[in-house]
Length: 361
Image 1: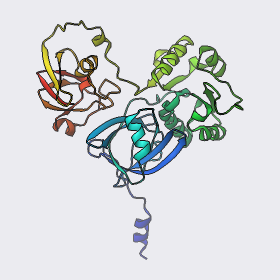
Image 2: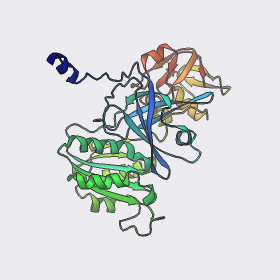
Image 3: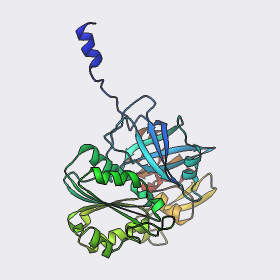
Image 4: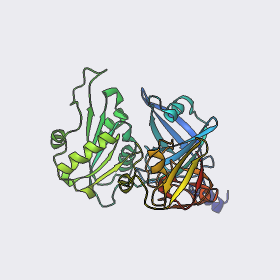
């Protein structure tokens, strides 16, 4: 065999990477049962493209469910150092339309549409001491961060604290225990609320509190706190961290729990002071009035109109809708692609009307 040809064949091939603007199709490679009601789903590009994402980011999925398409954001739980595929971890929720569908229908070989990576829940580059704090399925983005630390062997000091309803609800329990042994810079705390199903549990139980934090993380004020979980859990964590000396710049949180309406719009007068436009939601046969200083989503939510939403500030893309007629002033933060805008889609959460609108919702 020619020496030059051999060297060429042995040379590493340059990886082609997933393009956030052009690529949108994923194929499921694996489904893994994590707990009794949590599964991990691993996805790859059908063309074999690699993924460049930061630990803590997420993908926005569009699931075709019959005649409807449902959009949901799911945080990546795998390490960004493993670029050929990524994993999301999803908890089955009572009456959860999409989570139940995923658990019951997603299988190896299934293709889905998705956009990403997206999101700003990423570790500060200069921080060296962390408290990674999670509640329930909010563990997924902080698990990605921990796995990233483990794969890169960065010199860090990490406290990982995970709260759940019961011991059997502790996601990644075995892997976390093993990582805490292998990674000498990690201190692990599990905090189940009750010991149902495991009466032999020898650790602490209850909910996070200032007293617990003082014992478990006495130097919390020196750490960057990264928190993800249900809204009440994060509200408690935020209050506790602030009370124990964590500056606002040192507390970072992520949640797709519910839409957050801009505080200025919550305080807006009942009678809008700007120009008012008629906004029609064609599928729901509803019409509302939206002033030119209000977002479409905030007014729709107040009127009880059903629009899926998560971040409410143009990042996640969950509320993406078809604008049949009219025009809007949209100031998004990356949750929609230019080609989608060109196709007539928009984000109601960060769009204010410039005319009467007809929306396919």
